[in-house]
Amino acid sequence: MSALKRPVVDLKSKYKRSLSVSFIASLSILIIAFKFSPHSKEVASITTTEQELIHVENIINTIQKPGKPIPPKAPQIIDVTPDDIEDIELQDVEIDENDIIGPPDLPPDNPLIEEDIIFIAVEHMPEILGGITVIQEKAHFTEIAKRSGIEGKAIIEAIVNETGDVIDAKVIKGLGGGLNEVSLNAVISTRFKPGLQRGKPVKVRITIPIKFVLK
Image: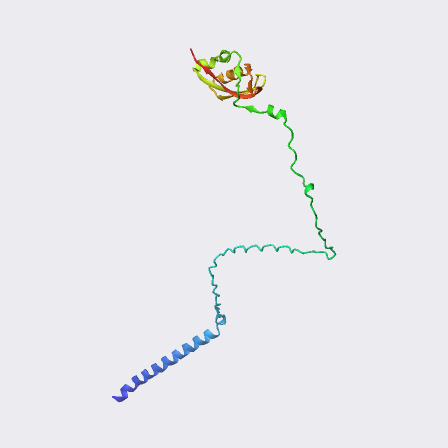
């Protein structure tokens, strides 16, 4: 029985040896093929470069205020005093009382000055030659005043000179409608008896009321 089993054991051991030899041979062939292959020499090399990190800082814009202007330097005042100035001696001055000049003499009375004075109230006021009716007859209504129904009292201020003529006149209170012009013309064209002050004719300022009444 032992003689019959020995060939089987030998086959198993041979099989394992053959398998090992085949595996080693195959592995050797693969190593040799990989080593001597032309593509094996080209080894791709990947190089990594370190990236520099850039830090971005938030810069705040600042506005620089202009500096205070530098005030200009004050000019230096140089005191120049000549050395060769002679001292001046002041002598006593005697003043005679007879030499004192008094105020100037007043000019004599000028009659022209009195003539330029315009009086407001005098001893005898100017009088209308012919009475107030003379002016009322000259102061007629205008068509505009009639159509507008204007009536009332106009007051005229006049200056009567020494001969009884009216040299100036103006309206103090007017009515309009052309009645102011009519009143002025009526007064200017009227003759007066001049006013008297101390028996002498003088210029006098008077006021004359003129009534306008529609009938």
